[in-house]
Length: 265
Image (cartoon, rainbow, N blue to C red):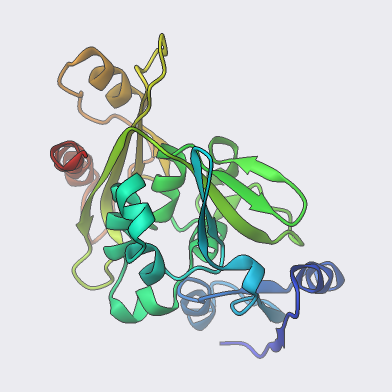
């Protein structure tokens, strides 16, 4: 790991100002993706701006037909939230399956989305639950936020402050864990909304861990809307590595979709 400076931000505005002043600085919240990347020298920020203790970035609250979750909210707090359990059990299920207890005690929602690891869990929930990623200056729809492996629509000096999830009729998450890391080798989030006349019948299916970035599985959405058997996944960017060949990952995607459908509530 390279040398870097550390700064604890006293406000969201101070964090944004620090990022603007140093184009190589990065936001630190839980650090569950960022710190391992630094240890492996995949990234070398000049400074870390710690936002983990900012009260305006933590907590969970209902806002009409949405639920707002602070960007610095820990995975374990999402997994234990009674309101979320009733409104969107798939999100609670997902949070409880991330990593191990130590990771869930430190990792945060905003950090997961900002780093956009292709095997992270939360990006699939953001896409399936029509999330809005709220920053210190704008609101970004989840469909426009994820741009590819470790790439997002965030500006270098922009800070995620919270995420607004739209409450579905029902939702669930199916995940096949890597046995060592706990990351998703295939994770499929399924949500259904009451959208009269929608081409996909109100279904949204998002997949993580399978390709070079999270994505909507439109063919599966259409099949669910028609009451048909979802087709095999076909993509050109399916991950093929020492952990699983591409054909196995596409098979896992179909199996995790079936698992999520069985869990729908």
